Length: 397
Image 1: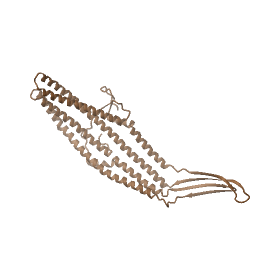
Image 2: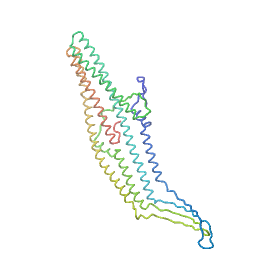
Image 3: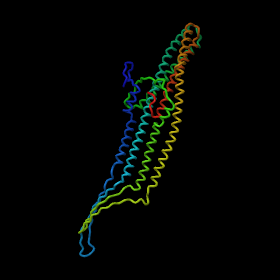
Image 4: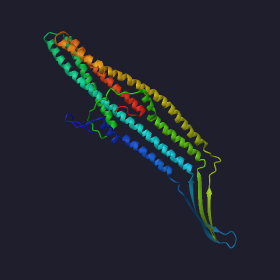
């Protein structure tokens, strides 16, 4: 639901809000629905019966022997093509397989859309954290810089200390401006993913998932069969299998029943008949071979994609392990160590035991550690989302 807060003049959205809005207003959803409707219409087409044919003919007639008599004759006839049940069944199976294929393609499209939204959302959250750090550092360094300027003006400190403080202040401002730019870029990207329902100016609220998500490599590998890529290829394989059946059955597609009446001067004839095509010259060898070749191509592509998926999933899992280890290292030691060092140096600086340069170095070191921690946390989330995209399965709540 939309978050309402007096702290924000713009509407505030959560990740679930963005996903719900995208499901309702993103043009991709209309494309997905159109593809599904077209595939369902294909089943209706496959179930349709062939229309009958009606023919009418009329003309003059004249006797060949005397006395010559002129009159007219006419004829009417109707015919009904009838497909054999195996032809109709194969055609319907193709349409149903195509519907399943379209469904799998649409599922993959939805998954990619949702993951793109999540990626852009967490990018905004990440850069908002970076911005908070930069603004806090900017305030602290500004205070330090003002004190250094005062000491330089009274001759208690050399001017290079003021230059050093100005340099650190400039770096903090640069970090803040870069974070603001990245936030705007991610928001523009999000707006393109959501659709027209989201206003030009908006805010996001949310947190990163916990860093204690435990994944087992065997369990992750077992999910490869659920990959949208492989499901799409399986559905395509079913389409071509049924296509082969249809082409074979079309060698003897059906028969045509006919009935008619001929009216000549003084005589009326009634006829009834049946016609069956003879597969003498064309036994659809080309069409059958073409469908079989397409099936082999899809099956080979399936095997290739299975190997590529295993490779990509293993690589993403290794990135997940590395990122998780980095996040845990920061959370268990580096963050506390950087904070402790800064407090010690700050206290020493206030008592005159350390110089301004050492204090600024400690300040910069802590800022770098915190930024690296946020980057490691983002890499951790991205590695899990990569596996979600490859596997088509939700791993991260």
